[in-house]
Length: 492
Image (cartoon, rainbow, N blue to C red; front, side):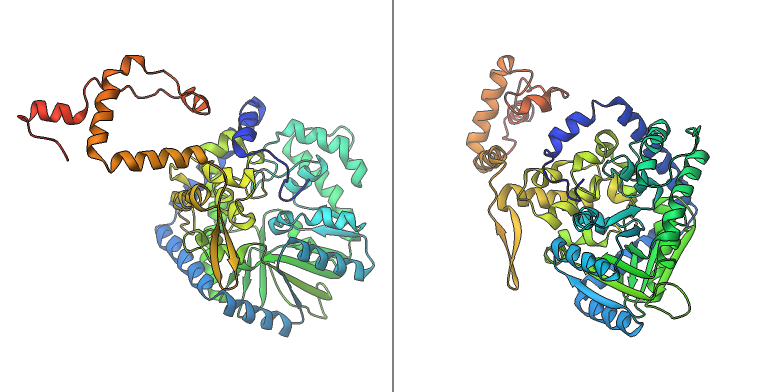
């Protein structure tokens, strides 16, 4: 399993396979409809939801404008509190830093609290290559790890699995990773959760090193925040002697007071709860409690280049609530694996191509993995205009390729794909700027409409196979206007 799923096909091919899996579609439909309905009720309880949403947007935008200053402040605050800050420009550097920190302790096992940043850089695989075993402790992440699978949802990584499948994974795999599943394990949620609790408890009590992410980092105090629903995060953050947190640089907020907004919007948008069951906060180290050593690895890995894009940078506002996935008609049918990234769904379609570039076939296809219906923007708690960014990235793929930083400037590297689309747009521009040619073309199309095919040829056949081509009218609009308006021309 790779954090970037290198080698996967482009979205259209992966999605085509996914929609044929009726079990997968049933699991996704049930889960996403349930979550979105609960979220809608939770949000409706707040009269000031839209004001909270705009407040979150403004806080994030202000932070991104002054990110350099706040990151320096964060480093100073963490250091003053007894922590050590490491800067990682890319995945390789982050993996090297974490591997060396773990090896310095002499340990060969780590427990992890759910962190999408570590999945993004494929940390588990990097540690495994160094002889270090990383154990996921979030229930859904545990299911994915035991099943040798990949996460398919931001909030519920095993959303594509049903209870029967989870039971089979526990019975088959738990014994290979530690404590085996109980005899006679059923597929009831309570029994599955108890099996996971017993399996993980021995790892919590044995592990000397914990690896975490963070939902937020507070610049003024050096405080990191993890929100979760199972208590596994609390165990990972307090029991180990060494704690290593790998966090994207965009997760910073300036002040403690800024957390107030996000601790209201994140639970309601993600789990549809009024407040999160477990909110863990830690600032450096203390002699009396918790880890004796704390390391913060600040991860760039494409975020600085994303920040340079005036339209695309709004993707860095994301607080990983997953609300956009649960309302997206494309995600509901294709599932998360089709996106070829740890960031699936609408947010992944704009975040992954910016973090990784659009040079690969799969990343060039992601901006097209959307119907542009706008449902994702309507539910986003920080008002990311995902459709706007999708169109912006489509333009980059078609016209300019990917953004490349050269010193203090960003240029567009020429793209090689989508030649047919570029040719079609050029032809349309030529016709629409020449009224006479357009009029002649419309009349010709009307007079030959009985000869027109019912489906498009070549690559367009797949599109028209599920859609009706609009029929060409018997009379062009301009001719109808002149006939019905007394001979006056209806346009230039």
